[in-house]
Image 1 (cartoon, rainbow, N blue to C red):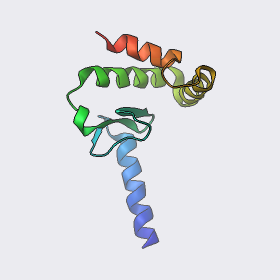
Image 2 (cartoon, rainbow, N blue to C red):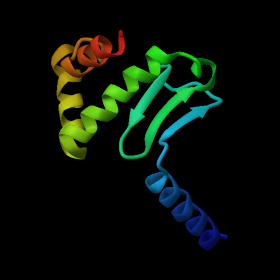
Image 3 (tube, rainbow, N blue to C red):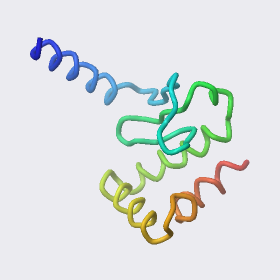
Image 4 (cartoon, rainbow, N blue to C red):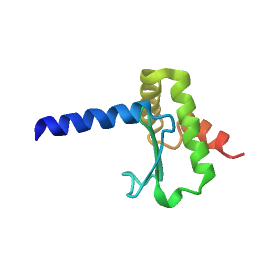
Length: 104
């Protein structure tokens, strides 16, 4: 049973990493009262009820661009530093940039 779980887990991880379209609409709530979350390198996760919200998708795509620009460690360390510096996830420069660029 453990071998089966390990094989399925590996296949799932490889699928997620190699999948071209990394946007997933999920049927459950994301913790922290969020509607969506960008979790590089795995993808963008959006609650299903917001599937038609183009502004939200653009916001998360900005985060994906930030990840591509900064790299894995740069993205996460900057985001965490900003979280602690500003005391929340709304006022950090990465979030401000994402809100600004998603309002087309």
